Length: 172
Image 1 (cartoon, helix red, strand yellow):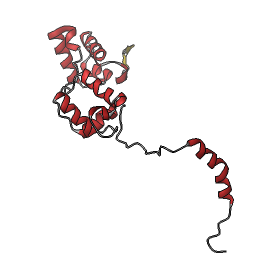
Image 2 (cartoon, rainbow, N blue to C red):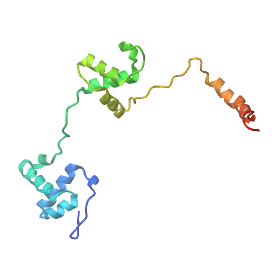
Image 3 (tube, helix red, strand yellow):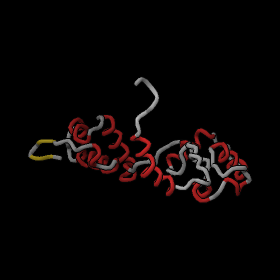
Image 4 (cartoon, rainbow, N blue to C red):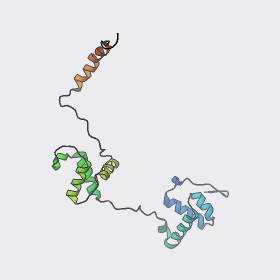
């Protein structure tokens, strides 16, 4: 921004990419040197020249941010949601597995069986973790007979008595 001939750099995160481009183009068209504009919006001079060229060729639409490139997802949004639903609300036994435990190899097999899409089970572990749904952990086994109330009473009453008694083993 220009204050009495002084250019104050704008923090990079303060402006969205399109705003930064518009500001740079506006300042350049107002006669500011490319070097100062580049310093202000914290980009290279080459970017300033590219943005000016895009603006001259396409107008405002030349400054629009393009969506990120990359491989398209293998699963549609509906399929992704269905996989998450299987893990969060369904039982693995409902799909013919012997135990109720969801594993990434089981999910990979099920996805391939249902939709013909091959996915690596290691990738699925990461994918599920990023969606906050599953982490590769085995749940702790608990006995069916376990009674937390009885255990709490034993720890409160009997354990202090056992702990107080001196040990009869060892040197005297």
